[in-house]
Length: 127
Image (cartoon, rainbow, N blue to C red):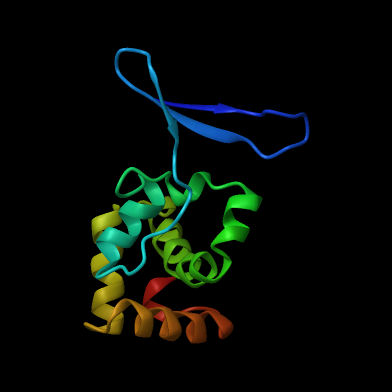
């Protein structure tokens, strides 16, 4: 279980892990993975967190600012998957559709391609 507390009014919240027996384990890292190999892991990082880290969707503005470059690059893909999930698809189906549209590009190249398409209203098959 994770507990969120504010130490000083107006400060950003700190999250702490709690062991099953109730002991406090320490702060939960608010970082992103160094390198994501595929979109499935990238979505896992956004939705649930990877390697004991907080899920990226729960980052505060201060935490997002600490990993600004990575977060902003990955937000393009997270947003595309999230949009399709809200439209009724599962995350697996949404990711498969992105792979179908962009092929087997690496995550970095896929992010660049999706960013370019977003400037023009998004890819037709992903709307």
